[in-house]
Image 1 (cartoon, rainbow, N blue to C red):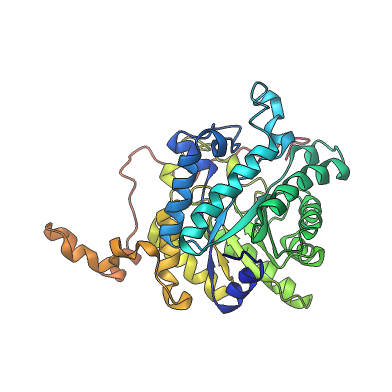
Image 2: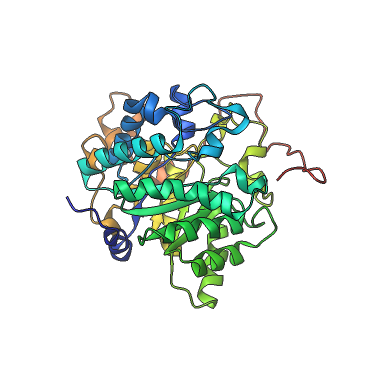
Length: 376
């Protein structure tokens, strides 16, 4: 099978591309990633667990297998003394190679594309300078070139300058580039507006720009609409992408720090979880907005991705591979319980206001404001 980046842009031109979902959060829940560090050494320590999650997303309808290389730069892997006794195996080169192989193996099982994932490095916020940051990015580029990935995906950048540097590094590969930032309506961590962030990513050379992580789907779409208007006014025709978190985060709409400021993060986020009905609505609204790369980030489980793929099945011209076990709302008619057969319509689920089943629950959390001089 020939692996060419051209296929990625062709797919975007012909209809929506469905991304994958959460890796570090989902694998932490499954017992293969350590909370706090959020690094991807599971690709060498527990490769079958990583491969299974790729397969779960493929079966749910993902068109892209993103390499599990989030936070896989050497300076992140050694941050705060992490993995000090495992450097022979837990290093950028080994992890990126293993991640590429796992993603490619599963992608080839279902005709998916492989995206080489690039994320922020600690050296940027530590003011180590562009040469250091670019050096960390280029270590990953060398592996991605060796492994012949299909396109590049930079994500989770909190500062537009670092995103621009990442795009500069990715351009050396001469492959299509997607780049997203963890920004909401308030802009990036240095005060740059979402509109300017989008324009600068496009001008730097990204073919696809957008937002990922930090905010829920509907805050993310609000941000994307701001980006879309600015890009149109600037005469840019790049594609738009969105990969939000899988939780409701309405109280942090105007907080540029994102969902990690929520008091429930990271061990008590479950009450905020999106339903598959929420995700279907998000997918439809994203598509109607003109977004053509639609997936999820932290908290987005395979069944959330299936909701995207099913909602956009007509536009994509195909249902997910797991369609044999997904009869939609009509499947409720097969239940032996009388009260389930009344729930076989889309209208029932779209009009439902879910309960939590808890008495001690808050509608919205109290957010501690940032103090002057606090690290963003």
